[in-house]
Amino acid sequence: MPLPASSLSQVCRSIADFVSTRLAAPQNNIQVRIGNPASAVPEKGDPDHRVNLFFYRVEPNGFGPAASPGETWQLRLHCLVTSFAVDDENSAGENDLRLLGGVLSAFHEKPILDPLLIKINGSDGPTIRTQVVFQPLGMDEINHLWATQGETAYRPSVAYEIALVPVPPKVPRPGGPLVGAVGFEVRSNAADPAGRTAPFGGHAEPPPVVVHEVNLRLDDWAPRICFVTGGVCAESVSLAVGTPFSPRVWVAGADGVAVRLSWEIWNQVDGWRPGGTDVDTVATGPRLDPDQAAGATTTAAALPFNDHAGQAVLYAKRTYNRASDDALVSVRSNPLLVNLF
Image (cartoon, rainbow, N blue to C red; front, top):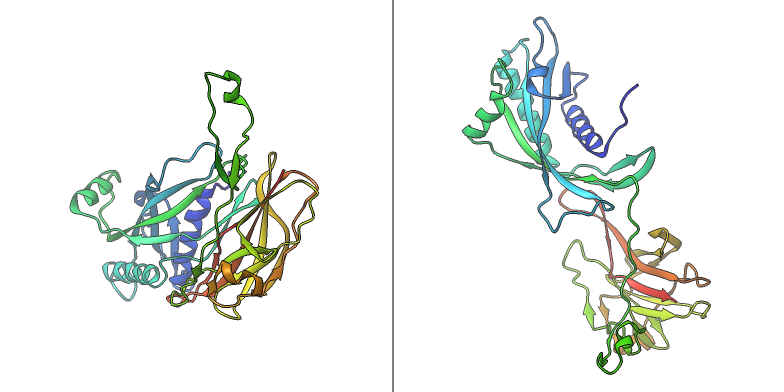
């Protein structure tokens, strides 16, 4: 019975499959293998060329603190790609260079690979896009790597860093609620010691909405949004459960460009997850000015719920084809928060 696939093995297999596809492996009698170089040496008389991917080093991502046990951990992999060609019309040495040249060309032309859906215990997990970065090896590193391969003679090799590789937990920790408003209150502990644990009684203010101009000169510009209620802009709203609220959303961006309004919802048991009904609309110009809210063109976006306590966050998502590689990329706006208490 085969072992279940891990997120690490799925990412490594996707890279091997990419190399196999770009080298047209089946048509050219090429095997793309995963393992240490010593195990990939062809036996005498083997007609197939081999390209071996040796994932020899795993590192933390280097950005921010380490993830807690309930959060997805992001890692970087280091991979040594080695060619083991055989003689045909050309010598094995020339075929080694042809194979490595194909690998170099493949990763140079497409350093960011296609989206990969990670499976966790048979269920859909995160969708990722790994980036492959060339890593030149010094003589000391080459010697250290090949000294571990027994009697295997050195073969032409190149090294890459692959990032980022997720390690999702089997039982993710539910995310916490977001802060909708900030306030302060002054108390005297000496006069009222119990006041240290009393409920907050001050006045809290949501973040103000400021004038924002979307920079449309950037290929990856993201929409800017706000709620418009009573002729006033808001990015955070707190309501008692059951309060009628029919939010209308002002979307700033390139005039007429399609965007999709999508909700995420939160409760104490399940944490954050998609919810509500998506709404397709268009941006109405690059400038969002709170003083012009009364005359803004807005779109209705019904709340996902209002019959129980919890939170909902609304985003405007835009997709576009990136000019550098024609990849379909999604960007999203600032969040709008609704707090039901």
